[in-house]
Image (cartoon, rainbow over all chains, first blue to last red; front, side, top):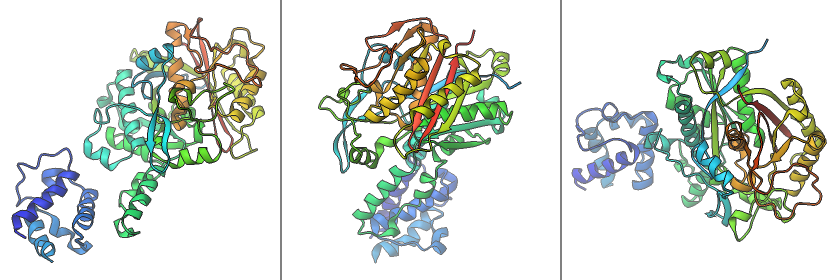
Length: 82
Length: 408
């Protein structure tokens, strides 16, 4: 799977969680939390949706890997390819 | 000397309207708010559903995160503040209290999660982390706190179907104790989102049903067959009289009396003696006699046992009062559960201005076991109204009564 496809799948999940936000201008290198007003419950939502939609488990110690879109793609691409 | 407490605003949503004017108009025009819905595991059931705009005062993300009861509470609280014309941004939010009566809370989310669990091969690893914050008993009030930034005492009052009045009473008491300067108080219900409440009333032989949904709820008619479950909410802004007058507030009425007591006799069957005591104690606290009451609003759910017991209590207290008239609201909107007391009071409050008493609905053949004189049942009655007594009773034998007087 291409990283662009992984990014699209992550963006789909985030757009269903950050319902009032516009993801069009998202800077992939900057913190998701700062740009999208996400809190800890939102990140748990992201983890849960990865599990439900793609059967991808994210252990708690890896949550910091979900800080930016770039770090999400880097961390999750191998998992999407498994 | 206790502070005098007045109602200065209200926000409501119920099956017959999303503000007091719309609700009142529909009551006077004898409209029904009941329709058939398709309920999981139950199929077609009669129910009362609200159609307010959930997004008017709440971001979409927070609606998804929260509960229907929270959403109803947020709508009602915001509408009440607007109606009261309070400069809320200037208020000390630590001096604001929110007191929301609920019949129950958490059943909706629990049913949904268990439904999902069975779709997911009983994998509890997919159980939502939102389950706990959504199902804690204070959730509907807590969502108002988050929405409006209120940092004072914010909680729910669990009191079955007596809860709507209980929210008001709690708000009144907290104002009298000077713990707060503004109360947002009343009751809400999201019960129509559960199948369990319909199934349980059905098992009890107490679920209102009819091919014509508007006839499924008919308290006091001999052909009634039970309760129609409805959702809704009504929250009031309450203030001390001197504070309300200082800011030139519109005053809907003054809460001059209230009482809460318990039957201590049965899980579900009401107790006429205790209900009569509750009304008499509320009048004693208000320092008025029964013949000074212009309207008694019945709880009247539409079950045979419930209607007969309550009417026995009301007849005992009021049948000798020639100027006291009786009405009931559930024939129009079904049973709004935790919201019933506060919503039904809102249906009668405009009587202070329009001097009409809305009738009961759907009484074609009066139950012969009920002997209530002065029951308004064939269209609205023209009468000057100064005092309303509002009853709400609930399972496990809890009774609540509030008395509101027109403010002159």
